[in-house]
Image (tube, rainbow, N blue to C red; front, top):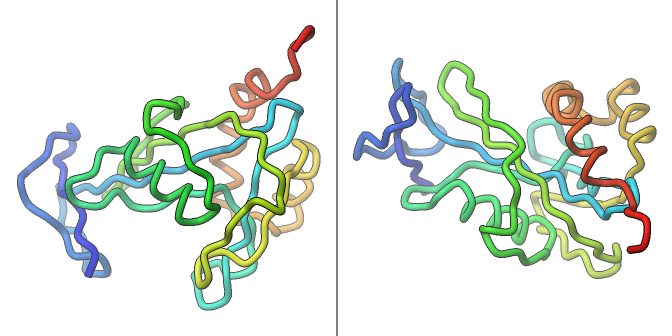
Length: 172
């Protein structure tokens, strides 16, 4: 059973917890984290959602819900490790932006890592494939429905910031 801290609309902890899979009440909010891993050469790391999950077979960036007692940065480090085997300290993640909907805050991060695909460790039942994709490939994948609309909208909002960080620097 997974528990999540409950926040108010100003993102203050309420001291109460929510049981995953049960409805959120009005005025209750949880936190979800997402991370774009980039290699510095114009590619983003994408994983494919495994069979049995919602949006199965579509590609996405890593992420998930913040568990009770975790910070957003601790959760993004845990989720990335669980889904890919990539280890990073919470302070290594750069916050791109935060948004919210009816019952959730979303923290969007990025992380610079060059990891060969053969070193990625996928989590059975969560992810079943991985790739480094160029920005043009991500656009094509969104257009053809290989990346779900929610992740596509997130990508478009953060694309400029990701491109700026993901360019090979001269003299590097």
